[in-house]
Amino acid sequence: MLFSELAQAFDQLEQISSRIALRDTLAALYKKLSPKEAAITSYFIVGRLAPKFINAEFNISKKTIEKIIQELFSIDRREVRELLLKYNDYGGIFANLSKNTNNTSLQIEDLYERLWDIALISGAGSQTQKFEKLYRLLASASAAEGKYIIRIILGRTRLGVSERTIIESLAYTRDPKDKKAIEKSLGYTSDVGYVAFLYVSAGLEGLKKAVFTPGVPIAPKLVEREVSIEKIFKRIPNPYEEPKYDGLRCQAHIFKANDSQNLSDRVWAKFVQDHTSSAEGSQQGLVVKLFSRNLEDMTAMFPEIKEGYLAVGKELFKKYHEARAFVFDGEIVGYNENTGEFLPFQETMTRKRKYNVEEAAAQTPVKIFTFDVLFFIDSPLLDFKLEQRKEKLSEIKGVHEDILPTPLHKPKDAKEAEKLFLEYVSEGLEGVIFKDPQTLYTPGLRNFDWIKFKRAMKHELADTIDVVVVGYYYGTGRLAKLGIGALLGAVYDKENDRYVTITKIGTGITEDQWKMLKNLADQYKIDRQLPNVEIPKELRPDVFLEPGLVIEIEADEITKSPVHTAGYALRFPRFKRVRDKAPTDSTSLQEILEMVKEKTSAGN
Ligand code: ATP
Image (cartoon, rainbow, N blue to C red):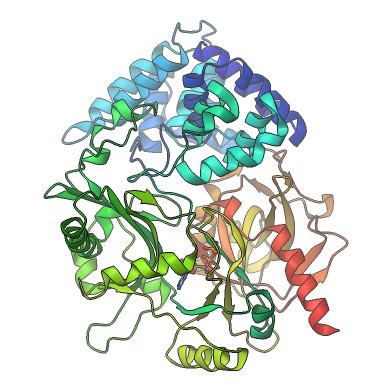
């Protein structure tokens, strides 16, 4: 398909205000695409060239785009700024200024190559080269093409289409009942483009190729919450109990460089030669890759953890000659070298950076508590019971000082479990996690196989809630000058792939925090209410935001609400911190309903 046709289809999607229509229109689009085009289109929609675990960033600033627009249309910076205030979207500005209705002959695949060509430029002088290549591309593009090229480059197509919407739309091209299977494949591959490619090629049969592959992260298994240890014992009669560290989730892959694993059917593979032999992660024939909770490659950020797992890998590969890979799941935590105490999340978080890694490592050393084994020797362990997976964990014991197995307890009853919990809390930990030894590792799923238990303060919910900011209000009085005075928070209704509002937060935020929040929020500004966001008329914000910014909220309780579209509201909401989370990973409406149910049954 021509890229101009795709741009036209995107324009059509942009006009839609109903979620169902959006899904159906997207499904109709997918029906017209070849498997390769379906893969590329899926990345384009989420403003990328490849899945998140592949570094395929354009590294082109808004300033560069501004300069290109200035030169292309012979206007000055002030004029671009004025237009920005009006459209708040460089793609929209381009479409408005361009009089060019002549589409290029670029196919979707051609554009994909051209964009990779720009993304891959690195080193000295790269900004100038990127500028020139993009300038040439935009100079020949029609108004509609340019609009989406710019949006893809800046990482936001503004269509209100998430990966979940893509999955649902794909299912609607064949059989809506396939949605679960497609979702599962996404959990195993973390690659919406690949999943689209497989499903468009051959439906469910095609998805059989979506298997766990070393070097490619799987979606981490998630944790549910419960209000009392007694209730946890009712759900899991003989649980494991582990300390809950408040750090960064990390999935570590150790595999042979140039492993025969076949990534060649991914459309991005030919542009990313070094993923399985990465100089940065490899040593003596072994590659170590570290992936975050959000499936990003964070290997370069944690040199000591990489070294540690490399040592583990060497031991294991020596022992098991025929081995192909080892994959572990764990939590990275910072610690104080003098006292040995663990550091709060905010300090560990300072290690999540691309620059000055060495300095940060010296200042905030980290260790990793490994709690699971997902691939061992030559096969995935996902279909093994936790009990069996834990046995393999003993193999990492004592190999490297920074790679530790998570302590594991088997309390005989709730009383013993509570005692242990209190001990961990007195040591400064957040709480504990109970796990059912008989359950399998289900990628990306949040269920009661793993349950966290934290201590609730008086008058507070047992746990915080992560809400997606879907709009903000200008504010009055003192805050008026900041241009922001209250946030509108929503939770994700995963059954219906939509966001419903649950809270308006305006108090307890300092002026500096407001400035920071406005900065972050403005990146998601959009000029309309998206089809998958349900905002009641009474709460219409001054600025609409595309779901993207996730914040953690503390509250006293959840009460029924006649106004909020979630049907519930948070009582006395207080802002805690910004979360590095995808909006679809925020607290779900289903979790809220569960929390309300628990409270009601606890009260009876
Ligand atoms: P999410 O469940 O969406 O990650 P969150 O970031 O708010 O939500 P919590 O629900 O509070 O995290 O706790 C779950 C997280 O706790 C896990 O994702 C993991 O990063 C961390 N964690 C710490 N210790 C453990 C452990 N022993 N077992 C499993 N997870 C642990």
